[in-house]
Length: 141
Image (cartoon, rainbow, N blue to C red; front, top):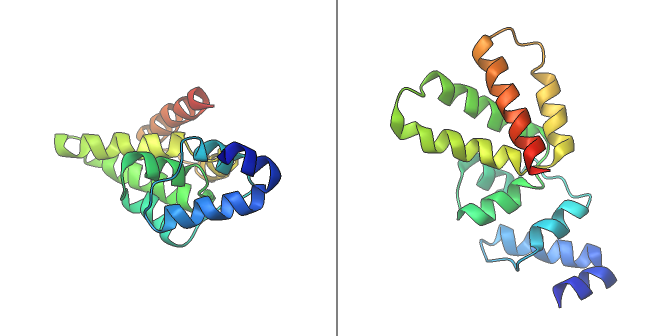
């Protein structure tokens, strides 16, 4: 039913899905695909905060991550780099992988822009992390 509504009124359905996500409510199965097909890119507000703070259930955070912009992806990459310097603490391992997963399900254009801004790094650990992240993103496409 939602697919039929999306075919007729894509902008209104996307707006409704965004409102549900912002309110912390469950969205229907297939919402991520509809949001990905839209031109919506969000770098501020409750959805970007949800992704950056890793709040909400995993599914909703991943759906929100699919529409965040390059600023949010850059911030996630910075969080990943920060965690990598402290990865010896096993309690941070889950958070590191959660961040990697959020980035890998995100908007490919936002990821490309964010990763290109990091392309001048000379830090071997950051280069390794960016390569790993690049592979994870391309696998999810």
